[in-house]
Image 1 (spheres, rainbow, N blue to C red):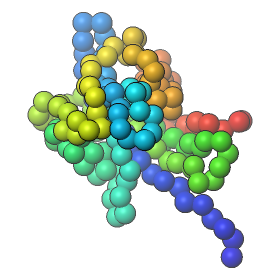
Image 2: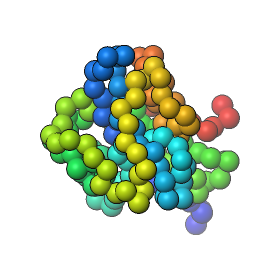
Image 3: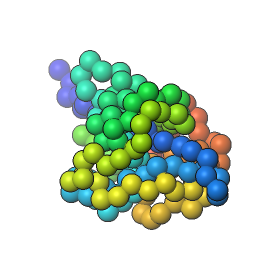
Length: 154
């Protein structure tokens, strides 16, 4: 039998709104997570659980992390991602945006999130988690596609 690696799925939600400087995205400053701490990232994101669709995971994560419901999700891209060529690091990330929702986003997990900030897509804080920055750059430029990759040599 062949040794096979596991691909880990995750869902990301970028809440968007129109601001004085153009389109703004809600980002969180990660802390105490063990991954990309002190980086800005999607305000809501997490692993897709067994038996759950990426859409369901996006809604669940947004409720758990921001106390927001009623998302009108728009699919942006599925990103196949790797790191250092190690098979264990294979990921499939599903990115969504939402421009309408119910509730006011707030930090629900202060032990994992140091700050929430609305940021113009044209003036993002630094550093942003690199693969998420790739999607945000595509959103700004209007160049996202249904399938994208990150971390591969070719």
